[in-house]
Each structure stands twice: as C-alpha cells, then as structure tokens.
Image 1: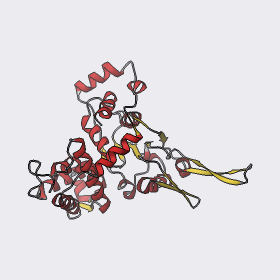
Image 2: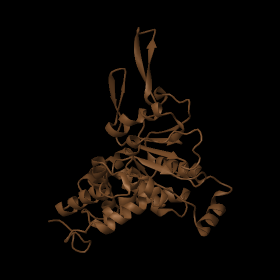
Image 3: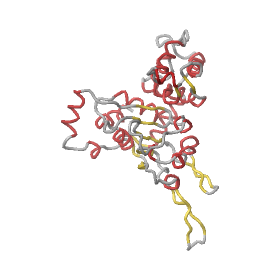
Image 4: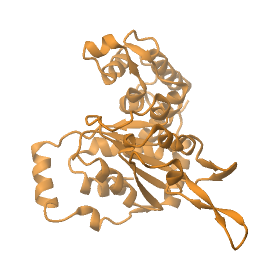
Length: 314
C-alpha cells in the first residue's frame, strides 16, 4: 500500500491525506466520491490510483445524453445463433472511473446503484456478477451546477467516503510546475500491485480486530448524527458499516491488527459528512456537515480502555 501511495503522490503532489482516504476506501471495499472545483486533480487522482494496480480499468465520461445501457451493457440480437447475447458495459472492470457523474441524468446515475451496493448487474432479468475487487471512483464539480443533476441521497450514501482535494500550497504547486509542466507523470506510471494481491490485503483487513467497546463507540457516533438539531437527515445504518470497515482499513494502514478510537476519528469526516442533510437554519448559519461531524466527535465520550495506549486484543 505504501508503494501504491508513493505512485499516486507522484501525480497528486502535496496531498498525502487525500491519498490516504483513497487507500482506506480501496481496502474497505468501498467507493470514492471526489468532489472539488475544476483543475485540482480529481481525475488525475482517480487515474493514478487505477494505473497503480495491474487490473482491469474503465473510464466513463458522464454526459446528459448517456444512457443506463451505456454503463451496464446491453443485450444484442445475434442473427447467427438466433438469440440475444450480452455485451458488457464499462462497469465490468475492477476500477471504474466515473468523470463528472452529476452531468448524467438521474436515470443513468441509478444504473450504478445495484453495481455499487451488490457488485452485480441485472439486464433483461439476467444477473451478472462483477469481479473482485470492484471500486467506483467518481468525480464531480460542486460549483458549476448549470446543466447538472445533484446526486440523490441514496446515491451519495453508497459512496463510502467523499474527499475534497483543495488547492495545493505554494511549495507543492511550485514542485508541480517544475515536474509536470513539460511532462505528464501519468504517462510513465507503472503498476506496483495487482488484483490478486489487493484481494489478499482486503481479506486481511476484514480480520482486523475490533473490541466490543470500540464497535459500540462507532454505533454511538453514527446515532449521534441523527439527534443533532442542525441535521435534517442523519447517517444511515449503511454508514455505520462503512465506518467500521474504514476504521479497520485505517488500522491496517497504520500497521496494527486492531482498531482504536483514533482510527474512527481519522475516517469519520470523509465517511459521514457527505451523508448528512443540513437544515435551512444550519445553512444560514454557515454550518457545514464537516463541522457537525467534528462536533459529534467531541461530544460522544471515548470508551475507556479504547485509548490507543491501552487498546488491543481482549
């Protein structure tokens, strides 16, 4: 995973935290939503992560005229056999890069719902399984809203984490100019892992130990988002599962085979914030979902015995 991170950071300069969230999402068997203004490297992050793993990769450019069958595939009549045969769409890949997902219509966006949740595609009453690992990395621009369709809550809830890249600092931007102005680093990026290795890593992450009090702490954090007055819609039970999986992945990336509360703190904002729907009053007060999640982390008491210095196998 360090090799993958190093590979991605050759393309996305000065953003190790963003790369960490992407790797956590990958190990947690989830999907990543990259949401930010144009030109900060959203598509470059997705492409660099995809190229760092020797597996099948596809890219979908979402546009208003894109149809669901353009994503999932379509059954075509074969005159020679006298029957229909299925032609798989670009979603049949280990890593699917969806560029500007909010430019497609809700009907086309919904084509990804079954893929992301159940890792399968149903076309003409026939169900086709997707290969493991399977990850969707979608990008969208939250500023330019003309001609776009906002992702519904059900779609956003299927993304394990959301990350915003943000502008680089001056040193990182200067380094980017020096290294990238005359050459595209993506062109020379070589795989440093493969699908089989990644599947083994995911199996190891599933086995990371989580003490009962830490599991309850995760449930308490998610439940607390449903009781905040500034929130119209809190995090779902799916969010609880994704929070636990992401915390296990974070622990593994930290070199531990057990989860501590700090792991939950490290992934809480990217995993929970995009699922919350704020009230009109919260928007008027310029409160953000990130502010609410951080307030919840401060308010919910950390379990005794779950501190990094004392946590472990029980």
